[in-house]
Length: 358
Image (cartoon, rainbow, N blue to C red):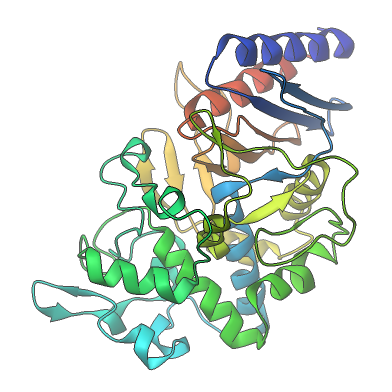
């Protein structure tokens, strides 16, 4: 298949998928393949919603990969180790009774690596239950003007939920763990988390459109309005309560900025190969999906998935992934709660088309 035909096919399927889904108001897709010389950037708005390929987007849990990358950079500097207890870096009030289960306090048994690959046992302040569909989003919707601090969310988790297992005893996705990692970064860098993002990632990669929602501003303000993010038909992008994302997924960014990050990560420009190997401390997330240190691995699966991606995805249908075989990176989002599965299928379908380019 010729390159131009492949790009047109990807675009046609992207627009068809978005147009057929009545829940999706706005969508983005950027496909870049170094080996195939492809750079395709798309946006689609429905129901009168403005959409542009270069507008800032809420990336949701994709931001966890930024948090874990900063932790990896600090580990390279020797200021922390993955087996360090998280309590070594926390204020006494936050560390107290962090992990109490069946009357046993295992707070000091939580290592940084447990938080990074969701094996700490700590519950999630969204109390997700068994799937993303079970997320309790009342934190966002009940009082849209409330500003959440990570300390408040950690205390909420301690007060309202019990740990699911002892540290290292299983896998359970927990944004609470990434709130703690944000505080670790602040302690070790002596700066707010959003400033650490700027120092370690945004400025070195010239990510001029990127910032932490409700906490900072981009280096250059976009000429395009930010893309909405939806719970049903309600656009929550201006809710102060999105401050709850913090180090668990609060990054606003353009597609081009996110592309800079994932390609710099994949080409070992941010961390070295040894650090990347350490981040591949995989825990089983689900069928064909493993989780390392802020890193998802979508594995090759016979008959279902003929290629492998690394990267991250978010509950609002966002993704930032890379395929090493074709040096292909993809960034995108459907920006609607619980559309993660459909968004990833869109990305995988695009990779299948790219693989046919000669």
